[in-house]
Image (cartoon, rainbow, N blue to C red; front, side, top):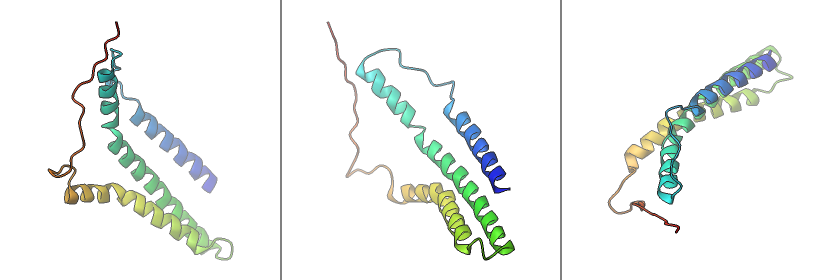
Length: 130
């Protein structure tokens, strides 16, 4: 039964990731200068926190379900399946499920912009080859 659930959860996870990674509205850089390449990289990285949150939620739910199934196996046959297997999966799933919320609370508390320290920004770079 667990092998079937693992295959099903992997298939659902793969279809979810395919849906996240295929974005038809993203346009490719038309030029070959450094500014266009940097802008394209910056636009691509802007969606990374959402992608990581989605991955964290999906893996957290999957580990939570697998943890409950391991605890069920322990209840049915305590001598073969230790309780710690299910507890570890439940704790890891809960931590991954809570990770985006904790990260958002950290960002709101500390802030992502401050006047004392700010990440440098690149305004424009052009290379002309003649």
